[in-house]
Picture 1 (cartoon, helix red, strand yellow):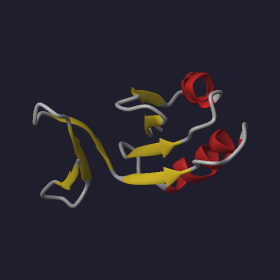
Picture 2: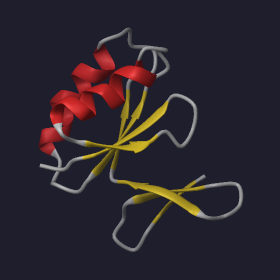
Picture 3: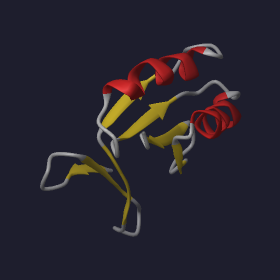
Length: 93
């Protein structure tokens, strides 16, 4: 379940009611073939402010490896995968 915090950012709340990752924007890449989710991530993340979290929704199996690998190469933070086909990336620079 997603709600908004006091600043308007989306907060994912787990089944236990605890907040997981706060994300500022969702990039829906479901149905896109590899490597399009990473390409779209690379295009959108620089447009967000430093510290923002972009949630990438990608159901292509390669995204589970490609998104964290891209983060390492680009010195961005892979903030985790809170749900299947969901990848959170924090802009670091």
